[in-house]
Image (cartoon, rainbow, N blue to C red; front, top):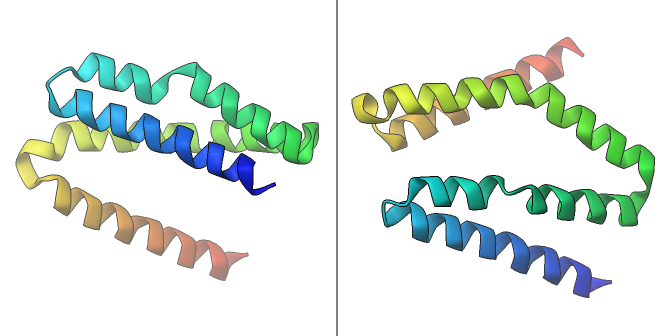
Length: 109
């Protein structure tokens, strides 16, 4: 059983390492392609399906649709603000936004 999680860890680490390497070398298109390559999604789909079946996979995909608009907004904000405030400030702002959102959601539910 632990072998599967080791495989997931290695695949994820490889994707992050390759994305970081090519992104830092100025090959942004290649880095973005590696990070967004559909095979990563397919591997995730397969692992969820084999661990839990069709219903958890459908819920995962539904969750992907729910977070997609927010993720696109996040990309837009980073794209527009990276030169103005820097990545660290964007990260702190993002963490604050997520913490406030979670706190509000927990109090309203």
